[in-house]
Length: 165
Image 1: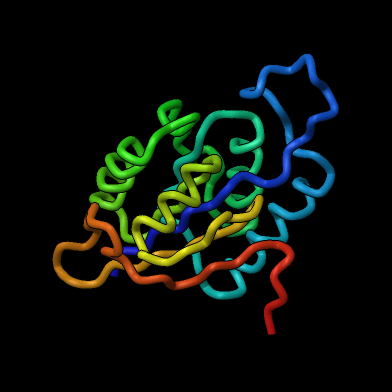
Image 2: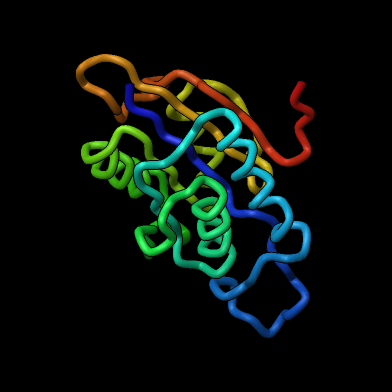
């Protein structure tokens, strides 16, 4: 089974209005939540074979925390400029490409596209994937990933403030 994990970057800082949006770092909560979510993924036995992330500061740092917390080599993270301010079609093409190479892909990016992709690929309504939220989507069968609406099944929807038994 192919598995895709769409991860919205952790909470970013707005303390420096002079910084370009691309360069905004994580705030204190973001630096706490990203390792926390990596731990939740690891506890569920979910580990990436590839991590692809937007190179924007907040997404890059989130990807680094996720890699560290799941045992993924941070030097193997792929930073793809196309994922910054990307539309659905760009994400679909990237997902199709990388899931053609691996079975478990983590993709770290930005809203609104992360939420739009989660809704499009699962047919579920999320309304808003919170910061550092993770939407896991599974694809069964020989074809693996399909770009069709609702083509995948929801595996998990988790985020820092969600209460998990």
